[in-house]
Image (cartoon, rainbow, N blue to C red; front, side, top):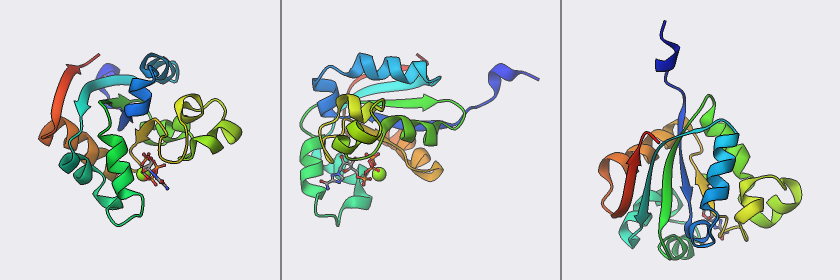
Amino acid sequence: STPGNIEKEKTLAIIKPDGLLGNYTDDIKRTVLEYGFRIFKEKTVQFDEATVKRFYAEHSSKSFFSSLTKYMTSGPVLVMVLEKDNAIADWRALMGPTDARKAKITHPHSVRAMCGLDTQKNCVHGSDSTKSAEREISFFFRELSADVITEHDEL
Ligand code: RTP
Ligand code: MG
């Protein structure tokens, strides 16, 4: 057997504009690596409105949709494919709850406790299922139309 070739689970992580502009990228990456993830791919993207609306299509009927798209286009984001056993659930757990104010109380060591502000400005995204992870990874690494600022493979 060739253990080095066994494919581990992959998930899509985004460091949102507040995370990137707030200079949390290095701290988030250090935490990610400490928890045993590999950063398989990454790219920096400036979302345009049409692209972020497509990415968050499942939320299009929510009251927060227009403020979400405004937030997500307010600056560049760092998109990463993270790889490890159980990557999808483990990255969700490491992010902490959606509301960063709650995260600071109930999950003080989570990423959102470290760099998030509230329910919207929560500094990171993570795929919520196998199906979402597949969709979101191909969204960014196969079909993306938004402006790609930088891209690296196999870090
Ligand atoms: P994510 O998808 O980003 O991992 O976060 P999530 O599952 O915890 O949150 P979800 O409900 O899927 O919402 C997606 C993103 O929309 C923003 N949001 N704003 N009430 C609000 O103002 C509100 N609720 C959600 C957040 O940025 C959230 O991550
Ligand atoms: Mg979600």
